[in-house]
Amino acid sequence: MQLAILGSGFIARFYAESLVAQRRKDVVTMIYARDPEKVKAFAQQYDVPHYSTNLEEAVAHKDVDAVVVALPNHLHLQAVLACAKAGKHVLCTKPLGRNAAEALQMLQAVEKAGIVGGYLEDLCYTPKFLKSLSSVKNGAIGEVIWAKSRETHPGPHSDWFWSKEKAGGGCMIDLGCHCVEISRNFIGKDMLPIEVMCWADTRVHPIDAEDNAIGLVKYANGAIGQFEVSWSFRGGMDLRDEVMGTEGTIWLNNFLRTGFELFTTGKGNDYVAEKAESNTGWLFPVGDEVHELGYSHMFTDMFEAIEKGKQPSETFYDGYIVNAILDAAYASARSKQWEPVRIEDWRGANNTSQQRDFPSYDENYYLIKEELLPSGERKIIVKHKQTGSIEKR
Image 1 (cartoon, one colour):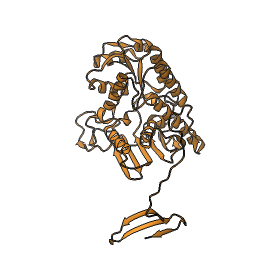
Image 2 (cartoon, rainbow, N blue to C red):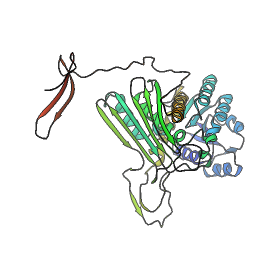
Image 3 (tube, rainbow, N blue to C red):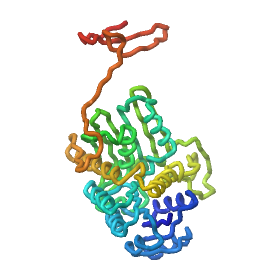
Image 4 (cartoon, rainbow, N blue to C red):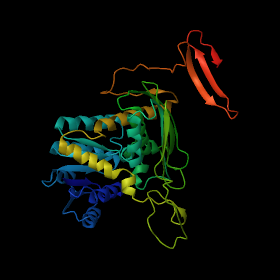
């Protein structure tokens, strides 16, 4: 597949590194960037034959089959509309839009054009996540009732992230989009998000947007998705997920503690890992950063979906739902109350009732807990189905 990458910044380079080492049959043939010197240097570094400072020209080029959008948030809509106009499949970095209205416009544009719109949510493609999600879908931990995702680091690389107008917000739009989609996958994308309670504040940086936030997303079946995000965390990038089900628990540590530790006095000047704050002392490198962050699996899924004429695991519709949830989170941060998630085009399950199937101890009692004490005594606590009395057996 012949590809155009729109952008020449940090994430564009991550994508290029992944694509260069990908399926060996995908070729980057076009680079677009607004800066003439940067786009030329990028093209030379990755041996790309064509480059341009004209977005429409880059997208419409005859040697481009699909477009990878790696631009600042405020340019996503323009880029996606250009792809839809040219009839080119488009894969867009997260978040899809600065808000749900922008995301919906992009979703409608790609569907009207009959092209694939892939949502580049890399953290939903990490090896640990994919293995965990498979376990959840196979029933290993029962019904998921709580899914928590955390992403914190010292702050983004580029200046535009720190502009509320260009980014659409602060750490919540930047990092919360990852966390919300991770929880959605574990809880079930078919489950309707109902409302959000969120705290957000600007604690450290002299910016208009939030640099710390915590949120709870309530789903129709009673499950809770929780996100913790910060641009003030010191010590690198912390990516952790926890999933609690009726029959089990999952803990994931994706980045800060990887099983690879290195001590150095700092005489070298090597790159350590994304968002690493130091290159001296004890460091926590990542063996294959592109792979561990999900880029390899992500692009494989996207390209195979295009070739087979189907939708990838992460679509523009997913990006729209994430934006709708984050809109409610921003509203809640302002109102200090639960705020409804407003979705104009819900395509999931319509049954919003909560099901409760409590385990029975026998025909008369529900089982609350069974436990073996240090003394060797087996303790059983039950509830009478008719009277509601709590008893010890």
